[in-house]
Image 1 (cartoon, rainbow, N blue to C red):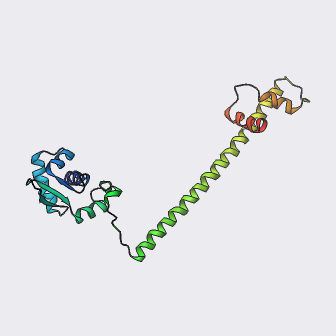
Image 2: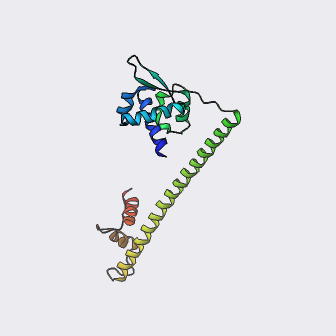
Image 3: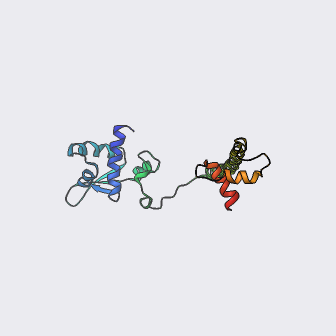
Length: 186
């Protein structure tokens, strides 16, 4: 955003924050502008048609937001965030039927894409759980065969006894802990 546009935005923001009508003191308070800056920017914002210049009962300049200024803000020329929802005054937006149908079509496409992505995430999560369990089973079998090969059990020992012993201890990898919980604790 250019410096000129930034300064105009600050000026307009001060007007909007004071109920769409602000005197010079209020604008200076909100923006931190000096008197010289106010004298410089006030006529430029008026010339752009964004505000109207009026005078209050004490003959002070007062800036009032114009329809053109409100429209410029709503279009995003100075940042839509300047107008809070309660400041919009129930402004209606008019769309042709074709524009409306285009908006509806885009929303439906976004909803469909979002649903498809949710389903993909769900599938990924299910696949991840399956893979974790599979890795856990593989690690269990590796520990079992390692125990058998180390000679702690004869080849004729029951595999279940070896598997149960392999699952004992606190040094289990995360995948084996998950497998143990699902297999023995559920």
